[in-house]
Amino acid sequence: MPDSERIAATVVVSTVVVSTLGDSITEGSPEYDSRRGGDVQSQWQHWATLKHPELEFRNFGIYGQRTDEIAGRLDDAARGADMLVVQGGINDIAQGRSADEAARNLRAMVRRGRELGLRVALANVLPWNNGREEHLDAIRRLNALIEQIAIEEAVPVLRFYETLADPEDADRMASEWTHADGDHPSVAGYRRLGELAFVLP
Image (tube, rainbow, N blue to C red):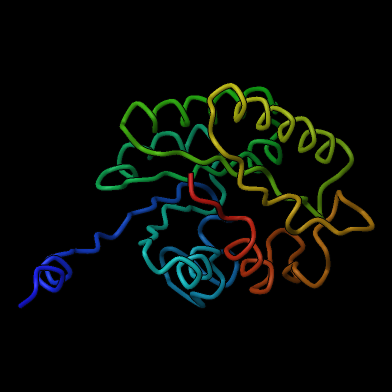
């Protein structure tokens, strides 16, 4: 066997593990539930896998969790991973917590992920079609803080907000990418997140 063939035969392609940590947007709600399963196409990770077959995505999303609750699961999610995607904040806002408090938790998760030796990306917060004006103001504030964290911690932002925002009303998800509940993306919306918003940290 020629040397070039022997070298090619010994090359092993290793899978890169991407751990995705967050709330229902990471989980794939409402069509996918981490406890009961459901439509896997209702997970942005499904679509990102099709685009990046060299990656193995692990889903650590849990419906309804705030950033402090998400942070408590980080070490488990990071185990065996090469990369970490951190997403969260809308449940803090919905439960009357401040955007600044959510941002502190997100920054701490970014720093903890890097401390564990992972490449880290941070997702911003989607528009909330059912939100009141004070919620929309808090989302704007939190997304501005996420931009600041990304610059200061030198991590990329996954632009979930911009990817699904209605071009005619940026405070809302476009109807064609929104589930009937008004809180979550539809399958088409999750597909856009996986295909367009995900970038390798």
